[in-house]
Amino acid sequence: MTYSTIDPGKLAAALGRELAGSGMAIGVVNAHSPESIESMAKQLGAQVTAMSLQAAPGTEVMILAVPFRTHAVTGDQQSNPDQKVVVDAIDNDSISPDELMGLLNAAR
Image (cartoon, rainbow, N blue to C red; front, side, top):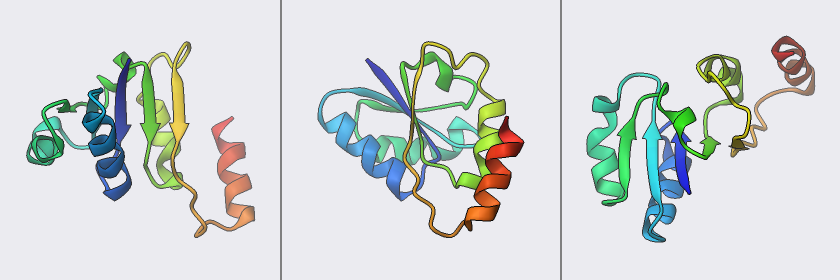
């Protein structure tokens, strides 16, 4: 099984390190370019590679570790989320219930 973590912050780096430590192949993704996070990927382990946001749908499991406000932008980049496991790893308490409902309604 192949994994990708979207957004190379602390949570995605920790997940990447743990998955790679278990022998799983994982790609780390950011909104810029794979080259901008290549050194971080190398530090996480041999099983970790930097990949583009467009390449992430090629993995079987995508772990979103992006701020909730950017979900729509991240989702727009995914060409075919069918038959894909998507894990939302963010619990963002900084979003009010009203703003959350607005974001959810806008995503429909």
